[in-house]
Length: 153
Image (spheres, rainbow, N blue to C red):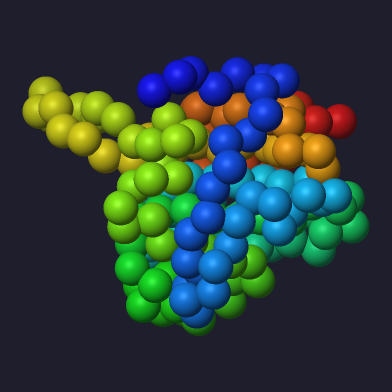
């Protein structure tokens, strides 16, 4: 897979959100997009990240940013996650890992010396013209909004 770099055109994608509605990159043309990839609904790190983005959602909207999360979880899992934590943004169910692969967010991980394939937690900031402006590969889950804000000033 080609490495995505700042300044590249964001890879096109389409997927189904928690309600089974198709969401695609072109839906966000004219808006800035925080596209974040996370491993699993309702796990501690993923919950912290989603809730930080939720708690700052109004601020992001005031700056003309939309937020979209992607994980390989099912639509039903996403629905429960959204309901439990009152998330105001869509989550895409990428069970086939097509979007994850297109954005280099699926790869080899290691835990306790054991290697396996999994979701690489990443965030892409995409501008209103569909160009990658920032890439975060070391996400601070509890303070992700501040991490992004410090880079996009």
